[in-house]
Length: 126
Image 1 (cartoon, rainbow, N blue to C red):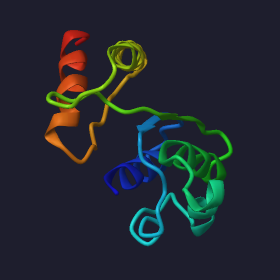
Image 2: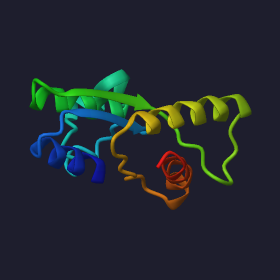
Image 3: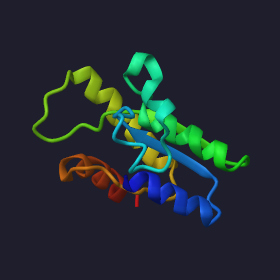
């Protein structure tokens, strides 16, 4: 919910380059609360829902023709959560690269655990 609102606000302020990370898919409860999603996004992939990052990036491009946006379906590794080692290493490398490329990072995730690693990376890269 915060990500959609912040992206729309930044768009209104003239920001035109977005990279959106999210691991979720658009569910039927999202369009009424999150202004970048539509009911059509819920029907994607036989009702499984379009990946939120992809749907949000596409919505921004529909709002302003000069927007450069990309959506990345990515699960942020969290302390105490078990994931295959190869998967974690690849995800950490991807996340680190994206943070290094960014001018600003907004951590609008649902949990403190999911903000931990990106916060450390952003601090390390100043």
